[in-house]
Image (cartoon, rainbow, N blue to C red):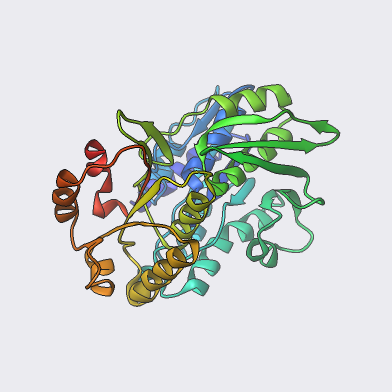
Length: 356
């Protein structure tokens, strides 16, 4: 593996093109796809396929660089200390973005401070290369770790953002407007849900502005993007409307998904959420926090997985396995509901889709 990484770094250094590094606890794959979609309206872009974002995936992506490529977009994942530092040493990014920093992979990082320190390694790399950082101006955690004096493009709802956005509606799809450098966009209707994706859209716009792409091309790229792989997909069935977000789950992404679900203007909605895995010693506490949040949001629904069932042992809406949930939903049909399916990949909630 070390040989592969050194070979990839040697190959990367044959090219003097912008290399964008993307990391974060949530949203990095969607952001990577949106950014690449926007940049591809003007440039020949190499980008990470799927979520090949580890110590093998990053080198394999870099080895696909060819003379015709004008920009590379490299997703970087981490589940233990120094992962991002090692990946930046391979990819040597010239621009970088951390989508957010939350409670993911706590089993490897031990605590939130470990996640924070590791994700910050991308900022450190960009600072050392005199590059540029694109940052969510509404995220105080990211702003607190921003190196002083570094080149920055900011995005957010705040008035002092370089790319200022306004979330107009969620029906359940995100509709928003943005402005920058005297340009005011029309309302952009998208195929993604959730306020968390509103920020992913603004991040993509920031890169589009950085690389001088016509705003009309930016808008068209964002309006036509369709998600895949059970990431914030909305599907209409004969009986219900489903929000499929079954690819992954951690406390931060679960909280965002539930808060956005609560904001969608319909009373006929039901959540089905699965256990959040890889949380180590924090697991029970973080699941209890989600249950408390659901009570605060006044949402109704079902819990799937042994962790939730351990806490909700007397709750008839909690199932210790997907198979037991499947048996229940086979006997209890739902109609005219907006249904959120959200859980860690290991729970397999996407296998319930056909029941609704």
